[in-house]
Length: 495
Image (cartoon, rainbow, N blue to C red; front, side, top):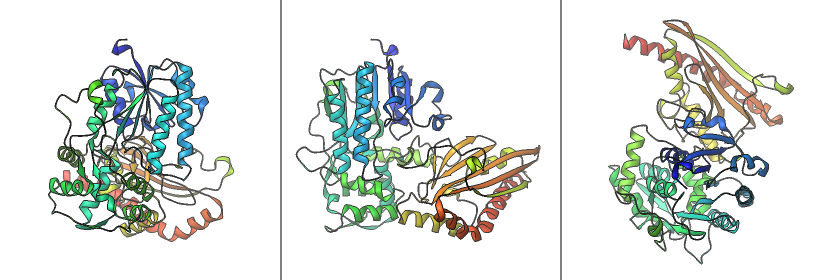
């Protein structure tokens, strides 16, 4: 079958790997269909027009049949690294649904990205789940290629962000014993190389293939090498054998942008060596022409991407487990529910384009234009109770896309130049949104409408809203004043 005739289906296209793989498959000449729960998240990604977008949920088998029709290769890239204790069961059900849909639709191949792990050892819950998913896909009868990767290094990857923030912030750090375990990291660009080639690589039978970069180093060395590449002093690492994954996950949740549930999952996956036990992948997929990327070069490339604001996807690209997915009702009194709002309007001595640029750059290192201490405290409290906090930042310092994480918000809708709506992903007894609308008054003036919305959940939600009301006048009024003021100052400075 010619390459241009091959249709591939990518699941997990809003995630870290899937969001990078889909455009590369399209660029390679494949007809690409992506399966996502919320197609709205892909409305303005640069490659949206290059793929077919299908709505579906892996937990709902009836939603899969149309998406799997006339598909030659299915990429299974959905995996939870955090969430509830029931995630293993949810992963099993999703894998069984995909296996059945692929079998009944006559799919020719499944490609699955699993985790690198040693044989004959007790695996962490997440590695155990990945192994179970792989076995379910193999047992489907559909030819299945499983690529098993360890620590993936790239701008925005959870593993890299954990290393980056720990090393940047802690000149002296206490770590569990796994800091001395042997790791074979792999650059994200090399993972994508193998995934693209897997669509048509020879596959006499279903099986796993270990993939890894050219370096086998200890985790502690990975942090020291990062420090060297980043121009930092060497870090002092103190090994504490009593530091459990739960305690280490809590610590990582406070020090890095990684939520404690994800931090704990990453740590548990490092309890054993993660080194390729075979190199059979070389027989079916040759390495990249320039060779596999060294760990040092992978770190250098990732830092360059971050410095240039060119991060394609991040670990936070996928919505966290349990995050709300329904769009904001257009009518605030929808279904008779109680809704609280704080609405403000202000004219601005700047044109609409300048005002919009300030609105779109909000959050991350640019801040929230009001009462920084209050935002920091709210973010810290969110981290303490297991939320995402403020430290996720933003993917690009100037531009936002639908679905982008933005501190403890997510971009739910963006009509560039006129509307930005954020949905809260912090822990709160209800749903919260924050939105801005920019209107042109005349060529030199504009108006900003700002609205905060809260749908309380039960009595706790109502008490929560009234408890923070005293701060609204400071936070929301200050935000409005400072956004419009910043736009006006830009006009003065440029004039």
